[in-house]
Every structure is written in C-alpha cells, then in structure tokens.
Length: 128
Image (cartoon, rainbow, N blue to C red; front, side):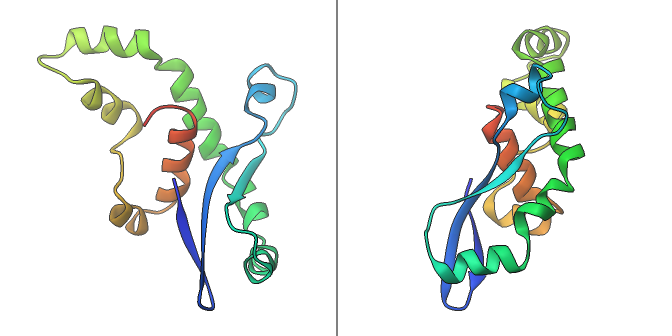
C-alpha cells in the first residue's frame, strides 16, 4: 500500500485511505474524504505535498473511489460465492479479478493510470 514520491534525495512512504468511509456509507455526509497518509514526518516532503496539492488532487478522483466502494457493496462475499458456483473451477482470486480487475504488482502500478490509487483503496476496503 505504499508508494514513493521523490523529493530531492528523500523518498516518502504513503498510502491512500478514505477517512470518512463509515459516515459516507450511512449517508451522514455527501462526499468521501480521500487522504494521503504520510508515514514520514519531514518538512521537505510536507512542503512538496502542499506545493503540488496532492490531497486536493485526490479529491478529483472521488467518482472512482465511489465506484470501487459500490462494487465492494454490490459484489459482496455472498454474491461472489453464488457467481463462482456458476463457473467451472473458479477460484476466489478469479472472481475478484472479474469484478475488481487484476491485483497489480508494484511494477504494474507505475504503468497503469491511477493504479496506485485504485490498489490502495481496494486494500483499504478489504478486497486484496
């Protein structure tokens, strides 16, 4: 769930989460709050995050986060079990891949648009 933002000679480990997931799911708020959890406290890194407005930019991808959350709700474990009974020799990984797409490796994340964002959210939602 970690990625690295280059900042001079420093690297930042961070991951994306939805901080108000429960409130959003029970309709106590209209929008998801998508945050970047910074695991390293460093002024240079924090300044870069502020300068490039990384968290504000992540808010633009709320529709993707909402779509992933809806898939997690609609295609829950019970649905996945029923779906697997219709297929020949499926595995739980096959079913999840059909629904959510392939789990990306660190090398693949770099090459896929919003790959890191998507994988972090799917891990946060308990899919992978």
